[in-house]
Length: 229
Ligand SMILES: Nc1ncnc2c1ncn2[C@@H]1O[C@H](COP(=O)(O)OP(=O)(O)OP(=O)(O)O)[C@@H](O)[C@H]1O
Ligand SMILES: [Mg+2]
Image (cartoon, rainbow, N blue to C red; front, top):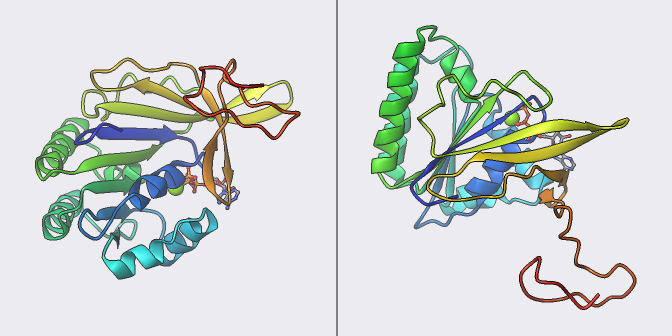
């Protein structure tokens, strides 16, 4: 993700949005910490979820490399969420900020115009503090959703990553598709992924399977340049 950009990670329940947020937040250090605003999962559960994908979030919290701020559902008005987010970002100097489950924060505010203005103001303020931001947002469509052209995120974020399911015969696959990257060309092809004890693992795109399957030799160099196999 480009530095100082805002990214929306959109996907249905269980698609891996929190996992992506955790991976992003995990690349932090005490002098460049991350802040994880959680709207669905309490800190203890997040720490356990992170441990399940090989991320020592507890250790990061202890060292000052990460902080979780949990907003209990229904207990915070959106202005309070905004004020808290800015205060925490200023206090910590966070370089990576995750809002996991932003739809929960938005729900109490039915007024779309006001919500758009709020998100824009919050986003601008956090970017101005030097952060790179990931918003995760649940969508109801399981397969490739077509809801994204509208809504609060259009125009707000620089990058959009869609996590969705894909049906190939009787098999349901997880797929990640980039829809937008700021000022940059990118590969539009959807990429399959698995969630494993090592976290989210992308499968090679078709045509990129360069590793030999019958020998132990693994080519070096960038993917796609060919190999020894
Ligand atoms: N260690 C693990 N090994 C294998 N799969 C895992 C592991 N940890 C989590 N998962 C799987 O990852 C999936 C996605 O988890 P995640 O919480 O990131 O999704 P989400 O999109 O945030 O879901 P929600 O909409 O409930 O917030 C779950 O379906 C779970 O089965
Ligand atoms: Mg989640």
